Image (cartoon, rainbow, N blue to C red; front, side, top):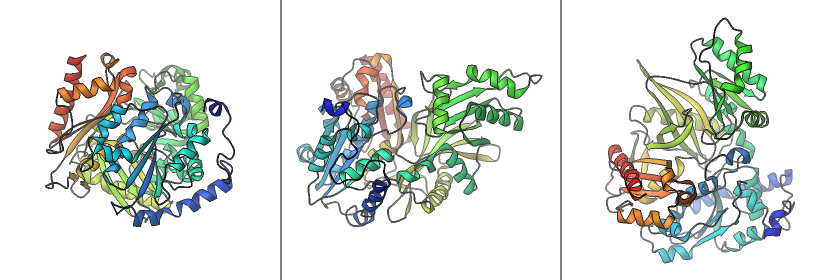
Length: 519
């Protein structure tokens, strides 16, 4: 296996398949995808239908930017919520990761399965690892390992319908789908650019939404200077501008420029040119100015106003376009952003504020309808900046994420555990048990240097002793994720479900208090 890693990716990893990244491969992928609507209509509604879901939680994005994210390989654990599919007794799951996941983490998820024993679920679960801790995207690692791809195929029973579920669908996931000969529940990578920052602004304008002042389709340092100059000329009171690469992740492709202390006696453009290397603060740690410019040149990007307000929120709406062309509003969230620049995704409250959750759903449907016309399939999210004014809330759409995101796995976990649904007309989530309303607070960034050295075994023991777990009877409690990142990086993720927003926050506060005491 080590020798395979050193070799270049084979042009034909499996005999009889098209050359990677070729026109023939793209055509073959479209033919494979044509089988998926029938599978969606016939297999998905039947909980007893034999099926196999291949989970590929790869963050197939820029490797240099990903390498700056603490514990990036452990983000592959966020899709472990998909193990809840094993509650269907004829469903198999194949879960592939860069590094081997500790068995106690798998046991932690399987014990949450309603109506299924751990033994029964374990027999239908296959865990495969690349044994590769590099920041290279997981899918790229898999494509370098023909024997691993063959093992994935071998674990799909011949009588099963199968599909791939991915965090994101790029050309790499398309290649893997062709190698495995199974469809993906996701968007064709030919449409991936629709989710870029530049194209997002264009789609928002098509929908008649309030697009923040800015400029798109930029690529050079000169473009950035011109864009920041234009923003300040249009709004002399502007204090900050945001520079974003088209394909960022969790805010780590963003940078903030401050106009503070600008003297109007100076030439604005020349002043920005001189100050840009000094004042442009990158969100991603260790991302230098020269590297940021290189990424900006290769990906393209935008410049837009840093929206401010006395009362400001960062909500999002999650949507899905099914293979049959139906549009579904899955959820709304109020995202919690942090970091020095206020651009880093920390966590989220579900659902979004009742003051505007219903309004977000309407705008989400508008964007979904525009994307449906362009051929988009699967889950995506629209992020907003919302500012409260005297006349009410004003919502500015800032980004389309044509992938799963930080709010995907918490909602999936809630849905799998409670078998409920989000009512977009009321902005509330109802469980199937007694039609109870549920809320949660989630975070991918519960972080403390003191947590370093705590193993997954330690965390599970602490959780059990301190009653920090999900109670299926009350349908409240806590679920942990990113558990594998705890010992080395001192960080983990949580989903805190409560009967009220306040109760969900109380669970989170208790977790922080207990971990502080235990450490």
